[in-house]
Length: 113
Image 1 (cartoon, helix red, strand yellow):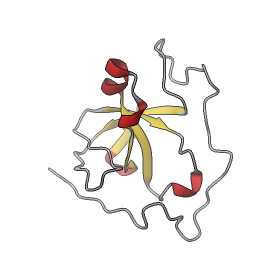
Image 2 (spheres, one colour; image 1 turned 60 degrees about the vertical axis):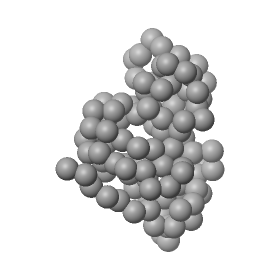
Image 3 (cartoon, rainbow, N blue to C red; image 1 turned 30 degrees about the horizontal axis):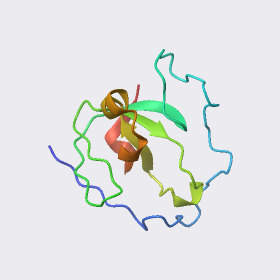
Image 4 (cartoon, helix red, strand yellow; image 1 turned 90 degrees about the vertical axis):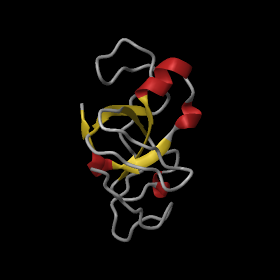
């Protein structure tokens, strides 16, 4: 089943949202998930896609059920929309170590692993 999700104000902070400047960021070189591999800068935790998500904008990440995504901290917390996370697919990171493939995706299409 394909589920669609729309972002509110792309890059605009939602009214009343509680955005903290002290976002939880693993210190550089720290492995937050017990993995022995090198992780991208700003890595927070891993999630697994439980629904497919078709990207509708250039800054979004397309998800297939079962994809493992490395969730990253936003460079500017004010750019984070409620219910959306920034990340990149673990498979892309392991193959290419390229952070440019990162994108935003709906948090409720995933679960923490």
